[in-house]
Amino acid sequence: MFSGGQESSSPVSFFSARAYYRQTRKGNVKIDRDTVEQFRAGDDEAFSRIFRSCAPALFGTAVQILRDRGLSEDVVQEAFVRFYRMRRQLDPDKCVGALLVRVTANLAIDALRKRKRENWESLEPDPAESIVSEAPPIDARIGTVDAINRAAAALPAIYRTVLALRYGQEMSYEEIADVLKISVPAVALRLKRAKDQLRLALVRTKVRGSDELPRS
Image (cartoon, rainbow, N blue to C red; front, side, top):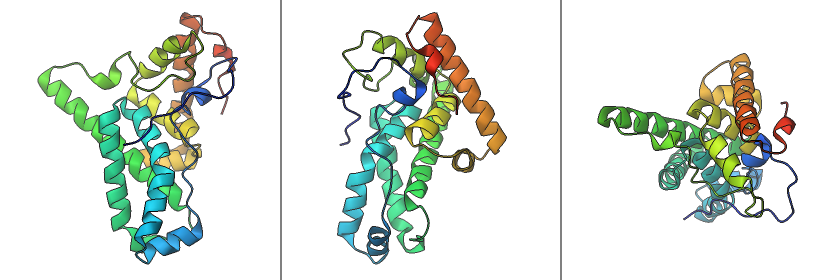
């Protein structure tokens, strides 16, 4: 149903967390005031426009958290179901797109926790922690893509999540704190540790540009 990403139109000289976590995103999740008002009034066409414009980006965020495209589709569909049900409570003067991102991220995190419990009970390995990424490569023309994908996919879920929200959806520290139910300093610390782990993994595989990870 959703497209997970597309090849870059220009060569990439180095890799970074920012580049990796934008690979499945197709634009920011932004919804204009008029569309929100039409949606609140029950305009199904307005809802369809919101779905078409936001679903790919939300799917990208879910994939980055879950590493499972099928489960990510389910998460995005459920997010839109909940979004539709809360339409009359939406405030056109607030960032409705950010609300939709929060709903999707929380559902993805819940799905990840549920899957981990099920895997623990069955003593099966957790696909979310697999070293093989199901996400599309950043740029298929660059030989080190597989190493980048493996390094990012191998990060613990808490780090994949904070990187996806920060660099995939460009959320502020405050917004991430709201989604994850942690403090802003905790977000900063988690983000630093995530980038440190990714940088270390890239250095170990001698991936060019590992020293150019974003600082914020």
